[in-house]
Image 1 (cartoon, rainbow, N blue to C red):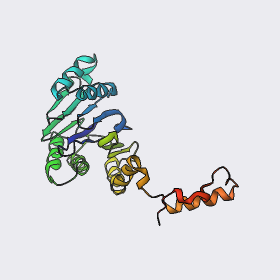
Image 2: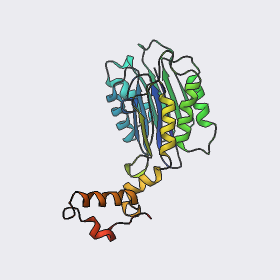
Image 3: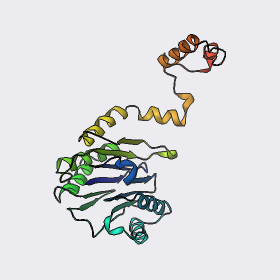
Image 4: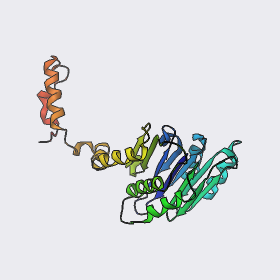
Length: 253
């Protein structure tokens, strides 16, 4: 039902994930990441509390193996779950519950781990890791998304339309580089995620600058002038005296 991959860039410290499923809003339920510390997946009849616990343990410095062991011990319903963890040392660990009834696999690679359940075949996660490693020069986000696409092309989920997906990559200062989610799709969740990524990636640097250094980013001229015109039209100049103090804003030419 779900196939996913978590990965790490040892140069930047970023952790990331790409995931898709036939259910809704998968990104908010199954993925947990902390920059420089680790990545956690909790899927198959998902209990998001397990992801919360796991990422907290990774943040404390526990290894992936120690983290999975602790999470497994925490839940009486663990045999329904599928778990994956990746730590800052590049180590990974998994757990496949005994009540899972489908084809389920995982494949570990260098700085990555692919995980899947209710799969069409037993080669899906291997195809994902191969795609992740195919071009080392790519960004972490691109590697993850290509891996997800490869899993889809290799068969993906056995009998279901992919209705949600997500691509997440951590960044410094607690601000993610990417947190892109397709929460509902008409059976094209992977394709829709690619389209969203292509539209967003050209804005990623600017949007981080808006968060971290807002004074350095010019105000869009059309928004600025439209706002002044509307203020004047409504007679709200005294309340919003923007036009009188244009010098306070760096407006793009």
